[in-house]
Every structure is written in C-alpha cells, then in structure tokens.
Length: 330
Ligand SMILES: Cc1cc2nc3c(=O)[nH]c(=O)nc-3n(C[C@H](O)[C@H](O)[C@H](O)COP(=O)(O)O)c2cc1C
Image (cartoon, rainbow, N blue to C red):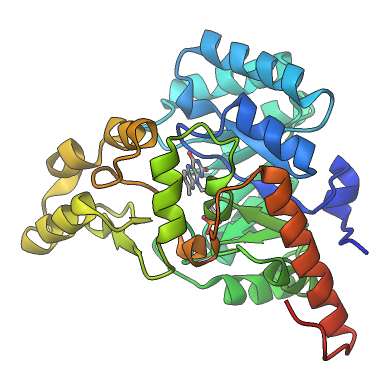
C-alpha cells in the first residue's frame, strides 16, 4: 500500500512529498537524492546568484536526476533575488528545461503571465490560508501552506499547521500541500485525510546523507529536540525559526533591548554567510540556521531513500489506523 494523490500521480512520485527550497543546501545532489528516493526537490536559485552558476547547477541536476522530476525554488525576498532579476531567472528556468517552480517570499502576480506563457507549473508557498486564497486568485497552480512550526520563515500570523490544513480544505478550490513541522509519515497520512495533495518538508530531510553539509551540523540536528528552535527577527517583520544557538540568544536580546534596531543593526549577526559557514564547518554555535519543530523527529543521519521508506511505512500504518485497525502501531 502506498499513498497516491493527484500530486504523486502528476509527477510520478513514490510519496506525495515536496522537499522545499533550502538556502545554500538544496543543490543538484540534494534534488537528485530526492528524485531517486521518489519525492521532488527544488534547487534553490538564490544560492546561485550568478545566472551562469544556476544554469550549470540545473544542468547537473538534469544529469543526476536521470529524467526524474525536480523543480527550482525562487525565493522572491528582495534581499535574496533582486526584483529586476526575477523575470530573467524564470526565463532561465524555462530555457533549461525545468517546468515546475516553488515561489516564496512575496506574491508572484507580476510574473504570472510570463510563467503561464512559458508553461511553468507554479507552486506558491505561503504561511497561512489568507495568502493562499490570494495566490489562488492570481492563478497559481498549487499552493504550499507552511504553518508556525516550520523551519525558516513562518510569516507573521503564526497559524499552526493543523489549522491551516483544515482552513485550506474549507476555503481553497485549487490543490494544496501542507507543511510546517511534518516529520512523520502519520502526519502525511493525516494531511491527505484533511484534503491535502501532499506535504512540503524541510527540517526532517536535513539529516539526509546526501545533503552537502558537515557531519557535525547533521549530528547537531539529530541531537536537538523539538524544543531547540527559537523565533527571532519579529522586530523587523521577518520572523524566522532557527536552531537555538549563541546567535539567536544575542539577536533576541538585541531585539528586546531595542525594538527599533532595524535590519541593518542585526545584519552583522544574521547575514547568510555566517550560516553558510556553519554548514561547511559543523560549528552550529553561530548563524541563523533555519530549523523547525520536526527536529524532534530527525533521529539519525541516513540516506534520503531510507528516510522516505520510513515515512512511507509510517504513513501506511496510519492509513490502516484510519480504517479501524486499532492494533496498528508505529
Ligand atoms: C535550512 C532551511 C533553509 C530554507 N531555505 C528556504 C529558501 O531558501 N526558500 C524557501 O522558500 N524556503 C526555505 N526553507 C523552507 C522550506 O522550503 C520548507 O518550506 C520548510 O522547511 C517546511 O517546514 P519544516 O522545516 O517544518 O519541514 C528553508 C528551510 C530550512 C529548514
């Protein structure tokens, strides 16, 4: 038995799981690991600011995926991808033979005509259902709604994943996937039972062997629990959930002492390059290292295919439970 949804059927996936964009981490090797494990990953465009590098990474992903699907994440935060470049990036994505994008950060409305014309399937990621309804109104193909539990940016509303899921079922007409704190197959079965076409995951997959990051970083995620994340940067309306460390303690203190500090005041501590170094060295004491409550479920470093196999088995057991098999445990 396996979970089949319109999402898994459309992209030929073993499990209806999207591995969302990961700044500095979701590269060709990561999406290939996803593809061969039967889920779909997204090369993160903002990690390759030089278009030639992005083009080369996509070509590499095509090679490594061997015909299995992958997409490109375009995080449209102005700081990551300057607005003027975004249209060119979408064009590059189509030219390089990728026909699915995960957009995030802000509304893709101004690019929808271009994306439709070039035949790109648009999955727009939002933190709550009110933004999903807006995305539906501008014609995106699917929305990914990530709740407060997520690693990275949970938005300002901080609505939990279960509530997002139920509201999406009630209010949306287009297909949606649900995310934020998903790390167990039972949650995937629950999301599908609640009308989702699948899930989007980040944190749970960071301990995949194939992820290009230092072993010490992954071990720190294994050792961490669901209680080891913290929300900061609320003062600059850019709330982020990251692994608790020296940087988050300092940033929280700076924001508490001076709510007017502004992004420039925080920049020396929150700059992405610091986090990138942690991925390279395994020293997780510094940097804003996005991670969510699913840290409670990152129990070992193992190949992506083994993670997906376990999620699949857990989802199957959950589906049995829904059918009244009360002795189904996992
Ligand atoms: C380390 C890390 C980096 C991320 N970077 C990005 C990014 O660059 N763009 C983006 O749209 N989402 C990014 N995300 C969010 C994920 O794509 C996904 O939506 C989120 O992790 C789902 O919640 P979960 O972590 O609880 O599974 C990141 C998440 C993590 C954990």
